[in-house]
Image 1 (cartoon, rainbow, N blue to C red):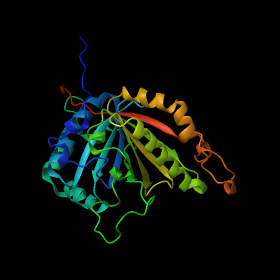
Image 2 (tube, one colour):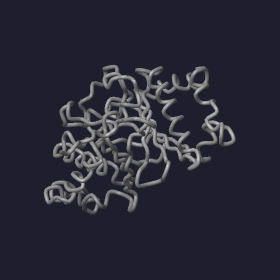
Image 3 (cartoon, one colour):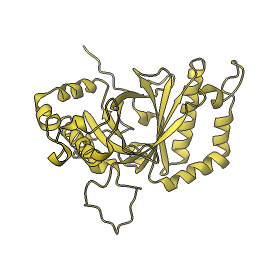
Image 4 (cartoon, rainbow, N blue to C red):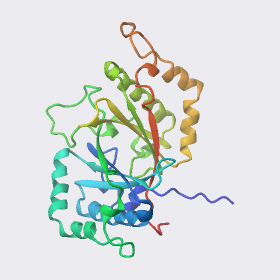
Length: 293
């Protein structure tokens, strides 16, 4: 008899149910924070992350939800956090918490290394390793929005990109793994590059509904035309299904082989759209607290 073990999901990092958290499909503004933990302090760094996330996700309900992921098949003890917000204006609420909330300060300032010389988060993380990117769901590719309506989020959330029914959509709270794909589109092909990415994910989302949900984001206040695709997997095993689909004759014909550039721009398929060597995949797994089932 074979027992199937359900993958750990980031939603377990919060005491709130799914309908009360922000995630990659319903937020309009995401901070992607990365930090490298010193090898000797990695266990303490993970516990610090657990304590901080639990407090933020409870105290900032409706404003911000943060989930932690660990990089695998990449840098050891390298952490990723996705801080989901509705709009950049909400970030000031987080700043106010950082400056004035006593419980937040207690968690941040607590001695995490009593038997290793003392110290808190500033000793745990390697200097200059903490940095942030701002991810905004790709927008402006259609004209269906109501310009007079008061938006609920900074831009339409990534769920608006999807052709999957809601019950089959996978997000940062419910994914067993996330492949973070980054790429740099050539400036002269910026529109064609986004259209290709949108077509790629539409094809994948349609064929692998319930297993894979892919969404597209732009880096804002950073490098121009640097794109992020978050490929949410039900489990790590579903990456094999994605790889098989990408190798299929159908995808080669419908997606990869399709002409993407007009003859006035020299013609060509998807491979002319991106700066060579810029497409990179990073596999992220939800951080599992010590002792979690």
